[in-house]
Length: 480
Ligand SMILES: Cc1cc2nc3c(=O)[nH]c(=O)nc-3n(C[C@H](O)[C@H](O)[C@H](O)COP(=O)(O)OP(=O)(O)OC[C@H]3O[C@@H](n4cnc5c(N)ncnc54)[C@H](O)[C@@H]3O)c2cc1C
Image (cartoon, rainbow, N blue to C red; front, side, top):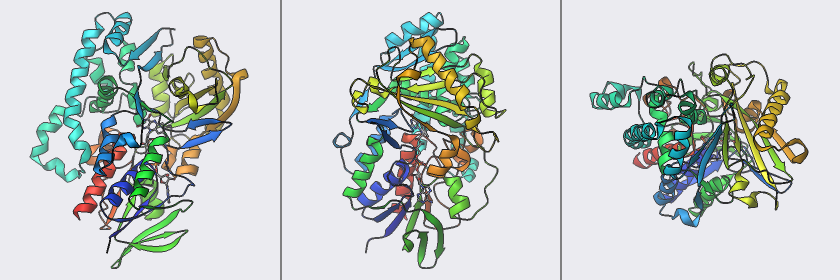
């Protein structure tokens, strides 16, 4: 008889786990509280616009390919990844802009304009990130326990990874200007952590976007969970949507799940729901004093017409970046002058909007709800005005009269929609003491047969890495 596995949550981590295990001959049932799959990689359809609500960058495409090849499938039959010519454009507060191209020669011309001699520094910096990448990549498919820190076999590796250097510290060794230091460390914000606090080895993200480049799945980011769901179903996984799991426990018969479907018995269970939420609310446990990532305030706009001057990915840096980062990560105040990110997927994929129209997705990092008692709703109009003003300065376009559709997503919505503890958009923070050996493991210490796949477990957050967590869990279950 086939062994039965329950997967709690149909986020990218849960879907990838379900596909791998269904393909490996397990009977897989997926329980999802929402009406459709994707979790934070969600879709909002409104007025003919298809808004991807969460992730917008595809980095490390080989991690996506890996889950399909694990299942003996060809990613090309499911997803159409297109490499972007312009990786992203950064708008500095002094009016200068820096475009990072897929073509490194063009990027270097841009860098020289900002900091004399920096193209050579760029080469050296990328070489350093490449060394980190070579060391870190194999680790992303392994689950560690802190006890392994006492294994001398890992000590040379730890020395090479320079864990006490920050992402910012590494970049500062290569670039003289704050502009370029920020330009090559802002990616830490994608992990929900300040570049001052993120360990230097997270600069593998810079390696990924500079060397492996940035991709867009045609049809939008939501094609990713849809593809994974399709593959899992192909191998027999069953999905129960609108079905929240309230409790998981073990008896000598196996692992029991309580949900709106009743109480059901499994050989294994995989929690893809946010680790911290699940520890408290599904397993009834107390949490250690964890540090959480920042949250974000999102504005999704459907515009009546296209606006010139913006690329697919755009970053606007605050006039005082240091203060901005401190307000988000240290002082837990709403930013006076926020840095923000704008996603205009219709630059590459016009079919995401009705003909001739544009999608503008605005992401403003803010403190998480554990640290900040104030609510975004008290600040949203000021933040929105600030963003609109900067866009007008850059593009000459006043967004207000162009808006056909507008939706907003607040830190509180991460709790309401996806059960994310403290509305911390990216889950547990990626500081040193919550990375690798110190991040929650993918297996449970108390309940044999219970596993965790997702952003707050090892190896960490972000789509490729969450997919790696599903590989770890599938291998652990298959090896059991
Ligand atoms: C705004 C934003 C921008 C981002 N940008 C990027 C990016 O550009 N590139 C990138 O790679 N990553 C990005 N990320 C990170 C990436 O989206 C996440 O790391 C990843 O989607 C997390 O997947 P997951 O499977 O761990 O969890 P989730 O997506 O949170 O999935 C967990 C699922 O569990 C369900 N669930 C919760 N509780 C229960 C329950 N009790 N019973 C049943 N189901 C339950 C939830 O509804 C959810 O569907 C971004 C995230 C956000 C939010």
